[in-house]
Image (cartoon, rainbow, N blue to C red; front, side):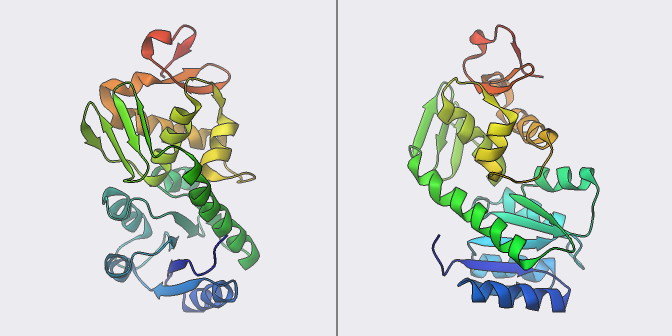
Length: 238
């Protein structure tokens, strides 16, 4: 893990933001703090960070709006987001991941846990360098270097997490991956999320792939595979 990575902390609770910033600096990270969503978006536009810690409940522009804007902009879609929130319902967690969050931490939390999650997210990005830069399979081309996906030559805008789900399935080249395997590859080992979380991402991914969605196949009772629709057999896309 390289030190010196830049992290933008988007948090309106001054004491919490200061504590997190202090601890991360002790770990060797460069940190900046934004107190509301609008200020955060302006800061990201000026100085894109390597990772964002985002409170969902922000004044003015909400954390959800910030996440949507980041993931809908090709210039910032690749920036990983760790959401931090006091909301404790499972549905809140699913919404966070659907918005493109790479990880989700509930308040109150320990700074040690946050540091571990940051390291896991950044490690996943670094380890992804071992995957071929361009994966052309069927009508879908995934370009990791450009962080772009095209279907029949037309660009498709994906969140960072959707991009990693697709990359994981395409890299497996037809092998069936369990939901646990996809979660481990996309979110990291030991991350406490429900299996439904990956289903949310796959559903969103299929919607964006349109007529090519059949390439992502559901193997009932097992998980997912990326292969031609003609090879469906006992597989579905529901």
